[in-house]
Structure formats: structure tokens, C-alpha cells
Image 1 (cartoon, helix red, strand yellow):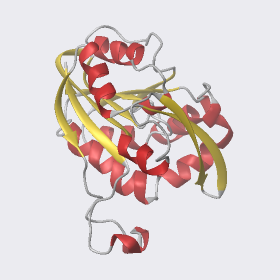
Image 2 (cartoon, one colour; image 1 turned 135 degrees about the horizontal axis):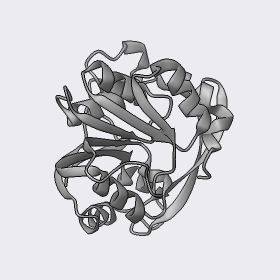
Image 3 (cartoon, rainbow, N blue to C red; image 1 turned 45 degrees about the vertical axis):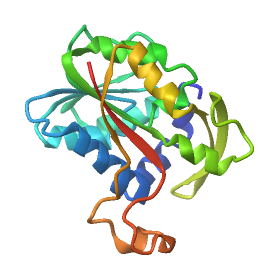
Amino acid sequence: MEPGHYDTFASDYATDNERNLVNSYYERPAMLTLLGDVRGARVLDAGCGAGPLAAELSARGATVAGFDSSSEMIAIARRRLGDAVDLHVGDLGRPLPYSDGRFDLVAASLVLHYLEDWGPALTELHRVLKPGGRLTISVHHPFVYRLMFPERNYFATEAWTSTSNFNGTEVELTYWHRPLHAMTDAFAEAGFRVATVAEPPFAADTPPDLIPPHLVDRTAFLSFIFFALER
């Protein structure tokens, strides 16, 4: 995905992100659970978008910094967060404007799956984490790709495109699939140890009208996979 691609629909994406099932009641609560108690922690929100996760982390007592490749997303985040969060326009995978070991925690929420090569991004996130720090990641679950495209090669790292609707605006987005072993290999090559792999349920307080009827009494569905990595 080209830097700034989200600029064209940033407002609609931000609005949709605040109230939908997948982001608001599934992915974000799961990331917050993995991050744990953040009081007094220095946290980097990598690919922060319009800032909903950063806002929650700040409210929970963390000192938060964030960056995103979309200047429009950062503008929305600044209007929302004011001076409470240190925000920058920046690209994951390129050198970041932070010193070595600056952060206790890093969150990379639904951002790595836009990258063909995870190496440079993970190397930079490893650099800015302090020794013993933790990186939490959410990406598309690789099995979803197999379900969507049964004719394709699960074991290949390859691009796929999907049309999504954000607050009434249809957008075509391109992602990179990689098999599970390629993910864990990339983590190890960057110097991380996998502490947790999670396939969580959606939040207990999810409004009933957001829950798809086909789930019946199930509390989880296949969508994203979550990792907590230790430096």
C-alpha cells in the first residue's frame, strides 16, 4: 500500500472504526488485553491511524507516542488527542524518529499485513524497545486467506486485494498473506521470542445487533491472529 493511501477515506475509516464489531469490539479489546497494565509505561502505537488505541492507552495511564503513514489520519488523531500523545507521520519499515530502547511496549495493530517484507519493520520495532520490552501484533489470520482463496498456495507470501466498506465508502485495499511459519520465522530473525499467540473471542459487552446471526452461541470467529513478542 502506498503511503498516504488512507488519506482519501481517513474520516470514513475513523468513524467506522469507532463502532464496528471487528475493530471496536474484537481487535482493540484483544490488543489491550495483551498489552496489560500500562500505567506508567512508555508505549509506541505503530500505525496508530486516527488514534483510538492510543486514546485508550493514554486514558489507562501510559505515556504514548504514535505514528502513521497517513497525514490525514494523524490530523484526526491530533484533533482527538491534543498534546496528550506524541504523534508523527511516518512509515513502518523505514527508520523511526525514536532513540534505542525508548519504549516499554509497542503495539502494531493491523499494520504489518500491508507489508511484503516484515524484516525492516520488525528490526526497527526491536531497536526502539527496551531489553525485556514487549511487542504486541495483530494481523490477518493466515487461515482466512486459505478460506477465501482455496485455489491459491497457502505457503506462498503473496498479495491479495479486497473491497471494504467504511461508513458507506467502498475502498479497495491490498494486503500481503504469509503462512504462519513465515510470521514466526520473521519474529525470530528480528530477535523476538513469541510469548503468546491468541485467537480471542469478541468482547463480552458487544451490542447484540453487531453479532452475526450465523455465530449462534459462539463467542469467537476467525479473523485476526494476535502475538505478544518479547525482546
